[in-house]
Image (cartoon, rainbow, N blue to C red):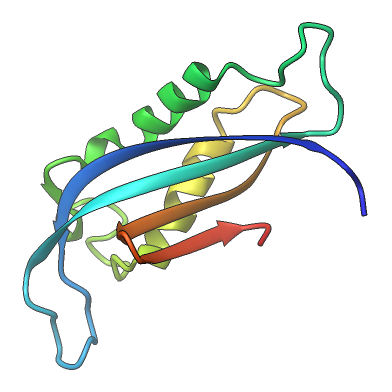
Length: 125
């Protein structure tokens, strides 16, 4: 097993959604206070002693989720056609955040919590 350094940051947003194909054609409209957690890794530790400032990671994560805050997810691309499940949100946020990371860092996973006891992850698990 390769040893690596890893950091994580979290942010939150509130949004509504309606799952398609859930016990009916369309689930009733409901909202969540979502929590999004990102884990970033690096093989080497730079001379400065940290792989990325926590605040920088948090800011990138906030930029990725900001368009969803206080919105109805089903109305936003790609969720106007992709089922807005927690799993699909995790993958969407993963792909957007991965594109923002500096070279040499890898995004291990993004976990999206729709409730304190329910979450879904995308990435290396």
